[in-house]
Image (tube, rainbow, N blue to C red; front, top):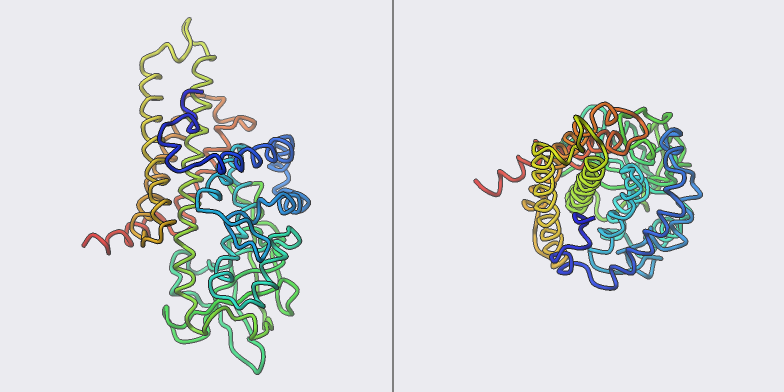
Length: 387
């Protein structure tokens, strides 16, 4: 396919032969272990835990993470390649389900003690335990500073009360990295705790029914006088907000890559379909209006992907890219919004039917401009840098 990114000259600026070899191994895993079953997992509302274990065995879960805890070190383009290939399953929910542990583990890796890392990172990267991140609450999504889940210290434990919602892998996670309020209102009173699912007072809802990301289970988590050892505190008490903000930069990069892949696959499906589908005696590609629509889609995908890669390279080089990754996420999501919408339009009635990839991409795409901070929050962040 002429529009596949692996053929682009700019591609070689970011991906080496080592990246390509790794990409190939993930592609083989996806073809063997995911694609034959993804339609059923969409209907089931999640993939089996055994898949997570298999992903751990072949090293997919640990890509880009420290070797001493079971990871496979590498630059930022290794996990990007992994996200892109898992997305090729046609289900963006699969990406969320097989990568959410990274968001849960990064604060542990960045703030945790060696003992905490051994205890909470190694089993996850080996595929023996699923992990999640719990920030969002029912009363406030992007308003992290306003979170209300409390953690009151009593001796050697914290007593936690509150609720977290929209937690990816929440029904099956053996541990979550959770934002709690240990101090005063605002950002200065937030801490991060690792909470294990078998802790007294910890309970989980049934799977939440969503529009998209159906292969990824989502849940609410309840804390009713939940007891968690003080030794599970990450870093200093009341300093957790900074760990959350650092984590957001990587999460937003993930979401930008997902959005670009959503758009890329919608574009490819549209090109294929426009060459096959006939109307009024010729293929859809034979109409100028269709060709021009596809050109517009292709231009947007190319620009968005290249900008995301450029920002990723600067993040990898250690530059502060808070403004830029916010821009990249917003732009990638706006591109994916348009391209997936246009793809459904090109497919017509078939684009509205289950069983067609563009229908799933259209649904899976919608959460991307909400997760990791809404588009409106991204604009507020960007505005602080330009005014």
